[in-house]
Image 1 (cartoon, helix red, strand yellow):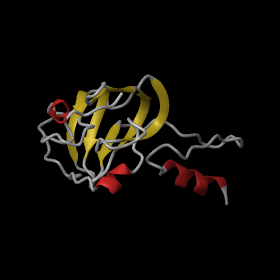
Image 2 (tube, one colour; image 1 turned 30 degrees about the horizontal axis):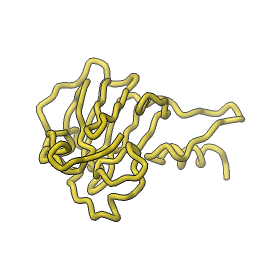
Image 3 (spheres, helix red, strand yellow; image 1 turned 90 degrees about the vertical axis):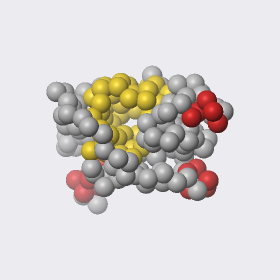
Image 4 (cartoon, one colour; image 1 turned 60 degrees about the vertical axis):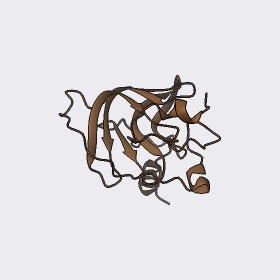
Amino acid sequence: MAAEPLVDVLLNCPTGALSFTRKDGGRAEAAPPVNQVRVRENGPYAFHAPLTVAGEDTGFRATLCRCGASRHKPFCDGSHKDIGFAATGEPESRDSVPLGTRAGPLEIAPQPNGPLVVHGPLEIVSGTGRTINRVVDARLCRCGHSESKPFCDGSHARVGFVAP
């Protein structure tokens, strides 16, 4: 297979599990012009930004658990399918204005037994591509029980969510 079509396939991997290193001087993966997280229907968060997750540089793509059942937290391992996790990928939009800076480093800090704390410019996008909110700081549910998904409402404490 020619390199460019293969690069296109690899760049469509939402998890970042498929990556590449060019040896022919061709285009490498670049940071996106807009940091985004896509809220997947009945599934995980798909982040696309220059990412640091739990203090580790993870490149430009990562898929993080939002059902609370992953055995590889904060990353998704597909457990949402096993437990029948149901959460819309089409949450209601919130009033927000375009951010002055839409790209740059995004830090994701999973809180012990709590939410994902996200710091940096981020557009939260529905499964169909509609912008839900534009934020610089967010607390995203990772226990699967929030009544205001994808945002944390403190339900993790009520349900006894346990995660590093």
